Image (cartoon, rainbow, N blue to C red; front, side, top):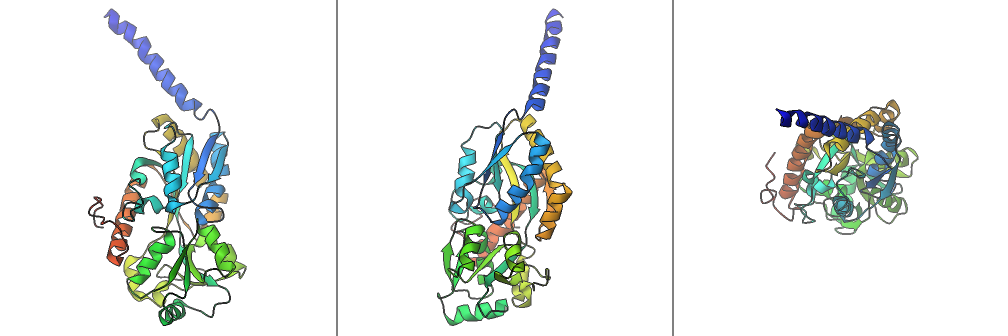
Length: 329
């Protein structure tokens, strides 16, 4: 009985310490590692949501771009940091394809989804001086001069590569891929005439389209968007892959303490619901999600299954999804 009496104060102290830790985090500024370069859709989303998350957390989040390896460099960097919740991975969909593309074994199963902010719409854009008015025109030129047309890319497993593989299953697309460290540098190269076309998130291209710096040929949808025709208008067979698109989120290592996770989830949920942020996302053609935890994990697994097996069907996968334990959708 005496031992039990002594145990009660100890339990109360332990509970109080845990509560204090939950309230204390974060005690200093955080680091946000953006998976892609400046100006790309991932960068735009990360920099737009961060001020609202800082307000909710009461701490500064110092952002840095660590592009390269189709997201592998930033993913590995964050994975090597302490599991304390102070280093955030501001990422996109790419790690879910690293396994099938032979880029590494690290995917989002090793991370906790603080928030899957939203899904993006993909648009195929071309240099403004190209004569193409549709995907049909682009594909005709590509097939007439194999290897001559240059496509902006972000490397194996990146969005342009994945979309190119999808198109390649329904129409021959013998292009020369030119890699860049993200959509931002790719869009700059496109405007400079260093590449001829590129598939990007609409968030990275919308302002350039409105300003006439690039021309939009199609959106990767079965319905038009803001006057841009759907890709199914010229390639109806690609409809079997739709709806499909990139996504943007905030992640920490899976073994970060629960108290820190809870604070981050609450802060980013508030940030993602901010009307100014929602307006920005909607204005760039993104679909809001604002999900975390188990719901986000289920979304990540489904996205990985659908996309990995799409790449396998296109002959673009380096490793079979079955070999990696990724189930068929």
